[in-house]
Length: 429
Image (cartoon, rainbow, N blue to C red; front, side, top):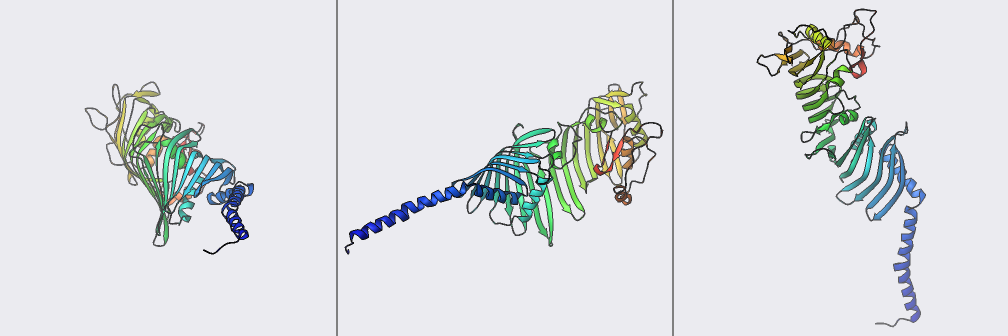
């Protein structure tokens, strides 16, 4: 070994100390200063805002270890109205070669106007093309809408292949009885060069509160606050709009909310509807097969009379002096298609064909003939009107373009009892 001068040894030691000790320490201090600076926080905030397409507020950003990013105090708002759409206490992002995981801590999502959420999901499915799957974990996820709150645990994953992008989610409600998770699957694929979107909801293992489903799809809840859905929904985007299919059960339907609050008739009681098969195309019910059971409750004489007049049903009991009567059971099977509506009574009685029965016997019997036109159901629910038009596929587009008048009874001097609102396809009081 050759001899080294003392000065050379000192220079080597100082160099090693500076390069191996001082320089890394200064680099760490510089890096820490940068990542904790206001400019870095703003850069991260702008990046998150660009990805989500929303206004973003961010309290802090930190890096606890390599490959781990922690965002705290995240608030999201609509860029036009400024309305808050989500708040998350903390988001931990963990990256590795095989998977990117985002853990959300105490997130709260506003689904009062869910269009921003659908736009975000569709945009992610449209733009996500990386090979690394994205996994999303949210414990104690709170959904907030106009009439309530619901807390659930959620686990979702975004996968990408050359032919399709898919978002799969499984969630369970915190206050629901033990059962399997509810599963949701979104997919956007390319078929024959055209993009096709589809969605599947599997709620066979656990009941889904219907108010949440109505809020997600931006629809009014006509079934009542305690109504639930158990079954499966499949929908696909067709060239002329969405087409969906449903089979399952709707439970805890409030008939007072469904009928009495929207039509000039009275019908109360809690109902259960078993749906064998239902098809909705472009927001219109094309096919419906199932059964309904309800009772006890109250029914107005006007509804019984209207059912007899327009649906060709029959009532064999004498007209009471009161405007409403009590019933013990309402039970029927129905088939609704373009050719018409068939209702078959299934009440528990020695005689067949009874749709509604009271303590003293049958109140309403099924029609003896074939199917009645679908519009007869509308006539049975809406007061007789002098303003009548043909209800056909050929006139549908025109009715949606022209202004629609209020419903008018036969007596022009009598006040209108109901109003027809075509954009929602619903009749309200």
